[in-house]
Image 1 (cartoon, rainbow, N blue to C red):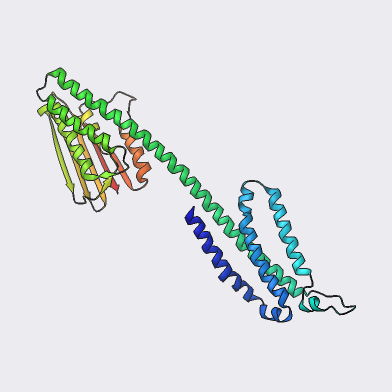
Image 2 (image 1 turned 180 degrees about the vertical axis):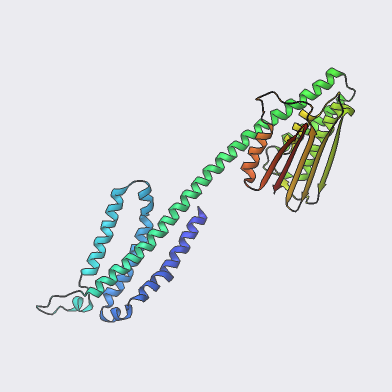
Length: 336
């Protein structure tokens, strides 16, 4: 709102100091001043008053609110006052002395000048008011949209945390049931991941190094669970350590790769690659499909992440999902 008021002040100053003097220079104001100083001064002041009244009343806003009665009353007042000024024989001679028997007359040229200046000032004022009203509505609509997006993001983050905890606790439970001797190490990894999720998911952005460290812990955690049957190729190249990304947005694809591409009884391989450089991030996963989701059950994972990306980056990201025979791949590119 402060910036809008500042812009309005600048426009008013431009009109008062530049536009109106230029308009008045079109007509022979000097000749009018010589013959009728009082009328010329009143005419100039009247035009500034008209502009101030237009800016005060804000006709476009009244029209948007369907207050047509006030609009008609305002224009009737403006036209009436202008008609009186154009037809009233206000001259220096008329004020000082009026010869006996002489009826003062107003020239057609003077009437035309008054109406010309009035129309120019009115048109300029209406255009400014209409522009500001449209600008105000765009800003208001944008604020509503941003509030909606923030609410949706909060909902998606609330969905992600339970999703992550359920999968991780399920993995630890599986290790306990199977009697794995690495359950304690897995639990420590899980604690570290839980601490990161608790500390960072409330933030809009986190350091890319912290997010990738979290993904590395998750990969180690899952490797402990599946043992030697699932081999993970984890490649991470970070040249831009100052990059910031939304927390818990990449882990969805890693979770998906382990959920459907890992096995504790059959040999398989998962490839995960991250590259951060030049203000962008490239994230790729590829896994052999060891199991498929139930028909009609797409879950909240990838589609949830896609929606978050749309809200946060709009057209500054690309998400490609490929499935070739029994190989599933994801390629995400984001301009940070």
